[in-house]
Length: 444
Ligand code: NDP
Ligand code: 2IT
Image 1: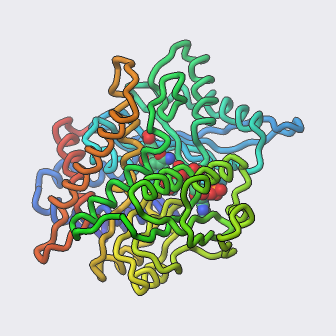
Image 2: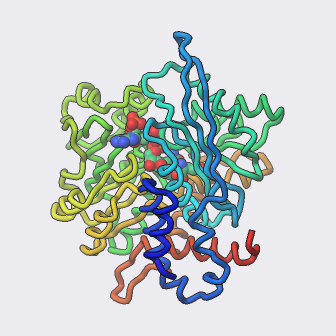
Image 3: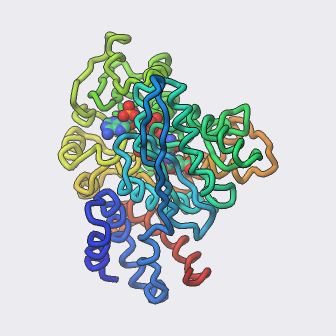
């Protein structure tokens, strides 16, 4: 396999789609040796077929605001690969959304979903709609208009969307309501639903909880636990909230959270009512974390800065892609941070990953660390009996899946000197499963 040729071709075909190129390069770099050992992958064109999505669907979403003004946003669904199951992946509503971002997320989702051990393919979708500052009625009208196009493309055995940045339980509710009206049936076509109408307990917490379970497994390999450790978190959304809850429960101390406006440092620890306050911040749709420092005067707000300058033992980036660069990584390592786990998708730049791995600290990549969210969704869609599992049952299954993902990473990523390259481990384990399924199914 000629990595440079493949990448040059991809860049030529899709110029400017940098996040997409970044995600593909990272995977190909770590599976190159496997592909070279398997001539059957080469002759079946597995790599060429894997790096292009099956299809990209794009549509306009016209909607009317509270003042009667008409707006037009772009809507997308990228159905990337369904070798091992129906396309599955979240919807992101954020002004930065474009094809490059959705293709990177859809591509990552293929391997993440394969790692969960459940039969789910990879996809992603969303819109450049900005929920910030919108009324509930506007969000509802937007979701309804979005679903008016999306419903033709999805189905419980075809493609099962869920939430991501800007899409939580509220938006899933509006989207599902419209789907049900158009399709005239209740089906498991979306995950992240409300608990009274088919949703699962623990799903809102699952990504954050799973990320912390994975972190604990990594720490265990060094004879460590989270107890007494200081932790820097970024973001203040769904994933950051779940992670803060579980870290605190396990005896760790979360000292930062962040938003696009800057970060909060709270040396007393972000716990109890302070974690619940994060939900209020998100619900306010204001897009800022500064009010935290007004509510809790022990905390300090650092405008325009990122939390990676704080001295901590463990860091969990939980906001968005490329939010932690090479310099941030150096500062973290110099300050004694020895474990980084990616709650968000691709939050570390390639330079940052290099710094972590060169310094041989524990580094867990997103597709392994944050797979608990989609895994919990997958469990529920499998639960065709429509039984409602208890909190404990879902949590135990989630815990088990995160441990088995960690085992796969160790199996495929341990270097001769004993250092575990979790990036390689996750990529190889996910790739092998998908590539073998594609081989079995012929050229389609
Ligand atoms: P939320 O919308 O609940 O929160 C996202 C957080 O990131 C918010 O604090 C948001 O602030 C912040 N953010 C978004 N863009 C930027 C930016 N450009 N700069 C700084 N901060 C930013 O989303 P989630 O918590 O669900 O998602 C967080 C990350 O986790 C994403 O990378 C997502 O893909 C990933 N993830 C989510 C899963 C899930 O189940 N929800 C599962 C696996 C991964 P604001 O929105 O105000 O800009
Ligand atoms: O990035 C992700 O894994 C998600 N946003 C969750 C996807 C899902 O289908 O639950």
